[in-house]
Image (cartoon, rainbow, N blue to C red; front, side, top):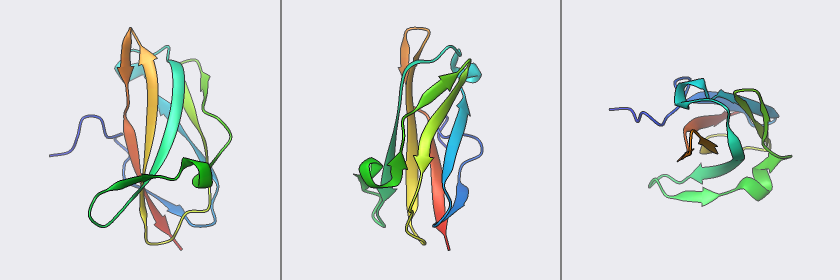
Length: 105
């Protein structure tokens, strides 16, 4: 059973040399996001998460009305999977939906 926190478009492929900032529309969670941040984790074969934000994210998360734009995801390792978490406050609740990124050549 898929998690209700996992973003509908997940998983998504990204080439190892591509540079992509992902957009999350927060309307389904109440919109008007504040206190936004993003964290990128590399998923090990056993499912453990390692924070690689310092290496594989550039820039900062930002907002545009109900949308959160992630920092740019860069320099992924082909054959690895990543979890991009969007953390924000909406309607007094702190939420953290995520997107799985599959790195390709």
